[in-house]
Length: 477
Image (tube, rainbow, N blue to C red):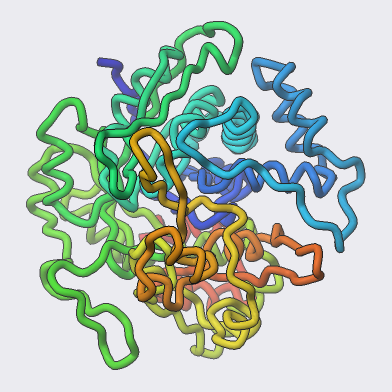
């Protein structure tokens, strides 16, 4: 078994891998240089990368990283396909990247590998701080190629949540040696087990020197799943991030039957609170996330056996994040006036997991904006494959047109009020699509519902704060 490279000391502060390019390389780099673990979001990086190239890569950073990629023939193909000198016209649509599927094409594999390489390489450029990448277990078809690209760039940590990441330790072990690797894929109605395969040597054209094995942190909601993963050496991670229900993005559903409060939000109870003693008894390093955004909370969790905290909201609201500056400014104003509202929406995400949504005019959180958007699924990262017949697949998403969803075998009620997270999150980082008919995708924002630290920082820094300031604040006690 390949052994992970364990940093000494371990970072006290992990910056969350948020959204689609909210946690971009600039944010991760800033956090890493400040002494924390800077984390890039690995979600939809192929589309983010392709759209940056189509916007002209005006500062040259993307192409600078591409010049460091080990296979320049692949780089040349990608530049010929996506790069537009000076950037596309604002009214033009972005050219699409191929949707994920059970059989990855060479183009899909190459774009994904290079995209993830570029993001990690830029975050690590010219310093020896720690950089991680965050993946969603729900986006299984993207993971092997994305992880390989991150490993090629020397990523220090891989983090994964939104599911049970039992196969990731083995996947990383094989990819560090450039061996052919498989990852199981959940296929609706499957009559057999299905896997997606990556052959690194076929992609790169040769076998390279073995890579550093990054430390793998499984994102879990409590000690039960942590124990399950720990017991088998094959599934055992190198540590855990234990994420509570106040964290941003996707949340684990409440244990037991789903109950909603008077505002339509899921009710979490005592069973959803992490048992610190049982987590500490497992014996692996762990960090707490969701509700730990103040210096006092950092001290408290460390006194109970945790290494430290993972924090997202403070960094999403920092001036170093990938969020559109106008959206960040509006949230700062709402913070100052005590009206910033973050709801746990049980229906928003096509995954079926509760999802935190910031309430703001002009975003998809607003019913009128949501209703004005034609339902379509053109990015498809949250599509789920289903078996048409053995070995033949279709793909469906509850946020696609309802009649299409039903025609593919989906239940009508499962499509109600589903939001297109892919396009909404892209628009939040200024990479939203403009349709040929002139329709422009509107943003969707997510934060954690614990705003205690953010409220303190906005009082100290009324014009906003950068990522190093947030790290210093968290460690100040």
